[in-house]
Image (cartoon, rainbow, N blue to C red):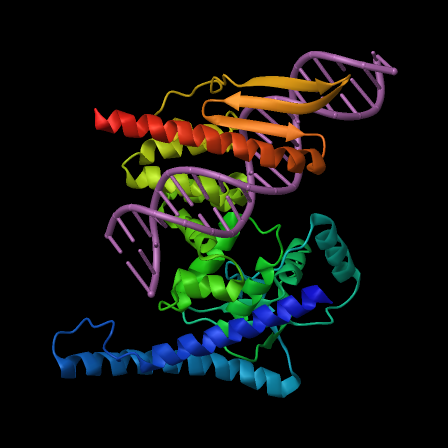
Amino acid sequence: MVTNKLKDRLLSRTSNLAEKVDAAVANRPADAPARANTMPAQLGAFRLEAREYQERIQKLTDELEQARKAGGAMDVPLADLHEVPGRRRHKSPEEFAELRENLRNNKLIHPVAIRARLEGGFEIVSGHWRTDAYRELGRATIRCVLDEGSEDEATVGAFYANLLQSDLTDYEKYLGFKDIHRRFPDATHTSMADSAGVSRAAVTKLMSFEHLPQPVLEILQARPSLLTANYGLELARLTREGKAERVVEAVNQLAAGKIDQTQAVKFASADPVKARPVTNAQTVKIKAGRSVYCSMRTASKVLRLEFQSEEDAQAVQEELRALLERRAEIVKTAQSSESEK
DNA sequence: AATGGAAGCTCCTCGCGCTG
DNA sequence: CAGCGCGAGGAGCTTCCATT
């Protein structure tokens, strides 16, 4: 199946990215995030910090490892499970309801895959919907297993796989790319675009959500579909130009359903919101008998010709070209005589 | 080289007016 | 009056050029 091939291709690119960036991170000098001033102090602080993190990771991983040896899985309190943005796969409300009802009566076949977090608790690698279902069913714990593979593989892989689903909102895509960028600070828009199979401009556009005012991001957190990246980009630009207040007000009105996205941008840019741009377009229909042969539309400097068939358009093209070349010649001689004066 | 921004293209949707 | 076609604008995307 084509889709699967594409998915495999993207996922394989994804693992490449993880390796590449891992390698880049490994090659980076250890004092990159330097805080101390002297070299020995930098190294000392770095080693202490690294050891501390290492110990915490080891402790949490050991607990899960023990559980796995004991029987492969452990019951984890739902309150200890945390979601990582961009990792959840899409599911319709109907599909979720089906899953929940299934789990109400049957026991969990596939345990939730989790990984220990530095800040405590566990992050869900896969099984977000199963966890949600258990929460709705009022259960206290859920069966979990320690995930294999690296954290980055899990996040990046799940996100890029999700990206193939068009029903992910632009804001959610932004959260995913942002998370990847947080994990791989060396990743550029270009490299992420390559891995995701989208254009670089698309990534840049999505990342523009980053520059929106905090209140707008909070609204989007609750309603991710409110703003698409095209308009997010415009509003981010206006925010940078110092119109953050107008942007927030515009998004509030957008959220209230009073205006659409285009009007929101106009409103935020402080331009008077015109009801509708005055169009002075004129359309002339050239008829062949009773049917329209060609519809000719003139608006400012645009002339549009629409024929009934491709053949008609082709047939006229050569004649029009000759006409336009003659006109261009006239304009040219007029220009040269003008410059001689 | 990376990123930002403008412009243009295409597809889609919706309202309006014409026609049978 | 229902069905249809058309016009116009919205939305989503890419490409190209400018800027950092």
